[in-house]
Image (cartoon, rainbow, N blue to C red):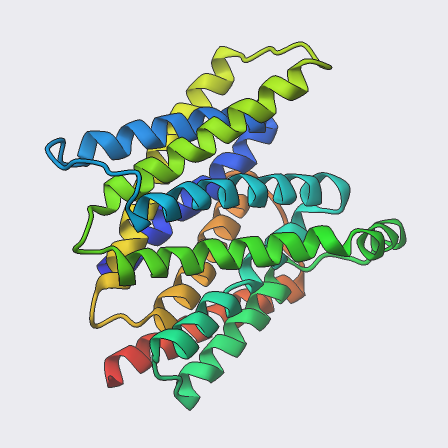
Length: 292
């Protein structure tokens, strides 16, 4: 459980950073792009320098493609946040845990018990109730017109989580996770750079010191969040059907309490009910793991 705790802390710190970026007026895309370069360098720093990298290997091809998925999911999340709402984006990304769970059960053969299924359903219900906000007719109209964006965030986030499990299952022991993610982050950085160059043809490019510092912090946190997630998935005592719900709900709870304490955001009664349900789902998952 210690590995999951660290994975939650570092993953939640990424969400908290994005909240802070808004208040500090940091250009999110610039920070994200710098983050990929820093994450790639950090991965290389902790990797074995004597291991050769062969671009013909399956892990290299997979990592390069995963970098593209990172960028596409980020763009979809950004557009959803701007055109619809942060709440919708968060619900889509957190509810996507059904995708890696389905992957773990169908393709890896992990067991799905009644207690575990109950906890997962409660976790998903808790996610929705924790972030739900008052209805807004204008925003509701935008949501209907932009369902494909929400779907993109849902599918993209789920595929990224599934990719982590795929890396742990197929490449762990064959190649260092640090090398896999170094290639992945580098691929995302290159693709993001091309996108930035294209957009800069219309809008002058201005990367501030503030965005650079934010990106450096984000990159280091990004690397460690990945490492602890993969290590938690590799723990034989922690099946994916427990890791992913705990991770998603844990990140949501940490981000929510941080928003309350640091950013002084307010929760409605239904949000508190969601928090309680989320905590209950964590307790049930912990009980399931203890029984096993």
